[in-house]
Every structure is written in C-alpha cells, then in structure tokens.
Image (tube, rainbow, N blue to C red; front, side, top):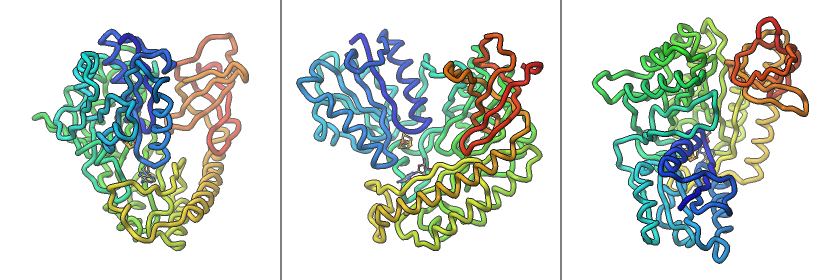
Length: 441
Ligand code: 5AD
Ligand code: SF4
C-alpha cells in the first residue's frame, strides 16, 4: 500500500483522531490523497451519534462494492466501527478492516496483517488503559491545535452512544499533555483546544494528580500560547473554579460550551443528565458573574421520548433566560442499545421537526440581538481565512464568534494566523462584520 484516503464524520474528537491516524500512516510511509479512487487504503472515520450520520457512512461504503472497489483496502474506523463491530462485515462485505478509537494504537499491526493477506481484521477492544499517542500528528490547521486530555465517558445519558462507542473515561497523564502543548507552542501554534467528552472530569493518572482546573492553569502559562479553549464541559461537573481560572488567566478564551439538552427538569431526569434546570441556571449565574464576559454555547435535543409540549416550552424559556451566544440543536435520534431507545412515548417525526424549527427560530432571534450588542466594539480576532472574491478576512474572537472583516491596511500583507483588532460594524445571527484597525494590526 502506498496511498491512503481518510474521510471524517462527527465531532472534534473524531477530527483529531483522524489527524493522529493520518500522522501514523504517514510515519509508515503512506502518502495521503484527496480522491478515494486514487487510494490503495480507503478509511472512513465514522460517527454514530445520530442515525443520519451512520446512514451516510453505509452509503459511502456501498460505492466500493465490487467490481469498482476491487483491489482497495476499505476500512471503517470510529464510533460506528466500535458499535456495529463485526456486523459491518455482513452489512458491507467489501469492508476488510473495522477498528474503534480505543484500538488505533494497533492500526499499524492490523494493516500489516491485511497486507500479508488476512481478509478481515478488527480492533474492537474497549478495555484499554492507554490513550492514543502518536509521534506524528498531521494537523489540519497551522494555527489551532487540538489536544486530547481525556477519552471516553463514564456517564450514562439515556440517549447517547458515546460510552458504548468510545468506552469508559481515561485521562492522559499531565506530563504527556504538557509536553505536547509545549512542543506545539514552540512550533508556532498560538491556540490550543483541549478535548474530551467531559473535560471537567480530567484527573491526572500520574502521582502529580492534577485536576482539570490545575491543568487549565498550567496550560494557560505555557509561553507562546494566546488562546486556550476546552470542550466539552458537563454541567454536573462544572465548578466555579473554572470561572475563576478564566478570570485569572487572560489566555483562557472567553467561552464555555455547556450542553443543557433540555430546559425541563422532568426531561433532564429522564435523560439521566444528573442536574436539573435550577442547577444548570446556577452554573450560568457563576459564568455571568465573572469579571470577563464569557460567551456560553450549548447543545439542545428536542423530541426526547416523553417530552410534552409543556416540557418543550420550558426549553424555549430557558433559551430566553440564558440568552446563549450559540446553540446546536438536534431532533432526538433513537440509537440502538441506549436506555431511551426502548421507551414508549417516542415523539413522531413531524412533531420533532416542528419543535426544532420553533427552537431554531427563537435562538436565531436571540443571537441576532446578542451579536447586535457588539456593534461598535473592538474585538481581537485570530485570522483563519481569506475570501478573495469579497476581499474579506475571516477571524474568530475569543468568544468564538466569526468576524468577517476588510483590512484597512490593504497592502496585500497576509494576515493569516495573526491576531488583529477589528471594529464590529454589523451583526448577523451567525457572524459579525467589521473592519480592522490599521494602527493596531
Ligand atoms: N439524538 C439527538 N441528539 C443527540 N446528541 C447526542 N445523542 C443524541 C441523540 N441520540 C446530541 C447532544 C450532544 C451532541 C453532541 O449531540 O446534544 O450534546
Ligand atoms: Fe459522533 Fe459521538 Fe463518536 Fe463524536 S464521540 S464521532 S459525536 S458518536
């Protein structure tokens, strides 16, 4: 095998796993190609969180049925691989490799066995201690680097496949996290994003025994870093000390992603989320009473089994009460082997769609108002992109808002990767428009 193609579905954890898998394959001498038909090895790193994501993978795989896919080694990685396991070989016989994220360290060995002629290979063990470390990570962005601090999840939310797709919680040693981050800073990365299904539960397995807040404080003091972000926080484990840390270390970005899922305590209990509406709002109050202005984003599920119109109205009222800076909202998707899948009182599809539309509309209005409040302010953005057609640069604020701006400097200098001060002139629901301040570039 000389070339590989790798496509990723799903969350940031998966994107970052793919950066590691790509690094691993490149270290073995394989070259990455952008067209699956040019590749000897075709890999899909899959997501299982909602049915739609899973269906997409099987439709991709069907393109590689014989005779078209002859001669290629087709592999399924990630959450669908872990959850479906050997059943994938039945459903898609053209697949030769199935490997879940906990088994990626075995990938080189599995691939060597495939090359030696073994027809079907799998890495599905979830009972592993070590987290996935590779000497080479092929990073997608030259400015922002993702760093895993904890893998898997020990919670049991009734709708969620993650514990069965990624196994139990495993924290990485603080020495290893710090070494990676110091190296990234030396390489010129200025933004680091700490990743975990539940970062608040980080617990250093080495004798140093750091908790999440200690880790945050240490990372924030690494020379060279300008922004540190972390996702995802679980409301149950989100303490005031995190807010205090953000207030103490300017390098910690002014943003917290705190998925609420529902505004109804009854539904939250039924989801096994381990907090109620009041406890969630308490966290919001902590965040809002910080000295710095910390943006809050969230995830919401509509149409969870048993969700009544009154429950849904409570979710809408929570949106108004918190005024989230952004929200990702989803129709409940029934996932096999989760606690909620077997429940009666599943909500009809049309009703879920109606609730989702109502929620999106409400949240859009909130975001428009919130973003509107920023018109006239000066924001510091990390410049990530340039659109030649409009002559606009694309940056991201500390609060994680996208800001499109024209550069007043206008001398053709590239601003990519730089931190620029820009004044906000207009606001939409999903982004800001502005212009850079020439003297502050
Ligand atoms: N159906 C719909 N949305 C889900 N999520 C997780 N599981 C499901 C499901 N079965 C959403 C949650 C989570 C986000 C990553 O995806 O809101 O926070
Ligand atoms: Fe999808 Fe969840 Fe797996 Fe991420 S952890 S890829 S969201 S199933």
